[in-house]
Image 1 (cartoon, one colour):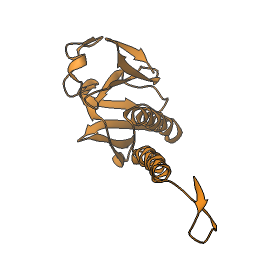
Image 2: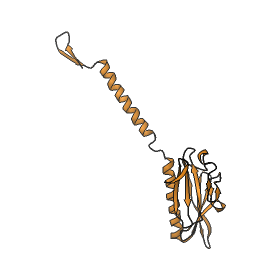
Image 3: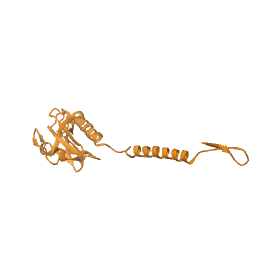
Image 4: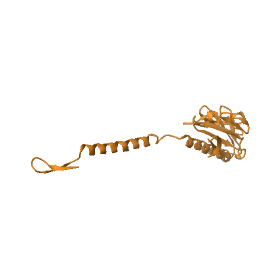
Amino acid sequence: MITGKDAKGNKKRGFTLIELLSVVLIFTILLGIGVYSLKNLGEVSSESEAQRIVSLLNVWRESAISTQSSILVRRIGRGFGVSRLRAGFGEQHFANYNFVKLRFGISLATRGVEEALGVIESDGVVFPNDILIFDRRGGAVAGAFYLTDGRLDFAIGVTPSGRIKLWRWRNGAWREG
């Protein structure tokens, strides 16, 4: 800050150009950080979408138990189509879920990886007839869905008891989580 006297002898105070430029620079940096932080605020991450799919599969399994009917989950385009199969009523389609970040399949990192049923299919669906079926007791047809965003790979496995688990490809192996 500059202090001095003007022509009439009054005290004069002010800021130097360097001080003003420093303040402007600091505000610009803070504004840039804020904009960058807010840029991805509403964006869905691949990890959270994979966890959301596991949650949906659990909901559909619980629906099979509560309605005492079979729930069929099949690949439709970039997501799932879900139907209820009830004795005497046939198949009734009731839900669709489309992926935001993920797609069925595997990336270059997991090409050639073998599974209990053999080599992972390129369409990323390893269930008999590509349909996951939850029965009225919550049991299921064993298999897996493989999903990728091109960078991260996920496997959602389903056991005959209906247990659903999320796996992630890390460091050359499938790891839970």
